[in-house]
Image (cartoon, rainbow, N blue to C red; front, side, top):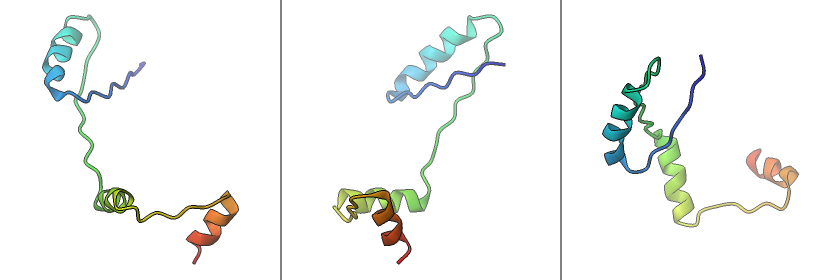
Amino acid sequence: MTQIILQIEDTNLIPEIEKTLALLKGVSFKTITEVPSKDTLKAIKQAKEGKVTHCKSSTEMFEALSK
């Protein structure tokens, strides 16, 4: 079975898309909503606040992470 993943920003479009897909023979769909983990939300907040580390190379990045 082949799968296609759609990322849709405007959730108002989902009912229309589902109706359209339902017209296609052999096509099924499942709506999945991803909820970011607490760690991910914390990282996003820190990045928005400018709390980031800049590294010139992957070696420097791994050295910073091992501290």
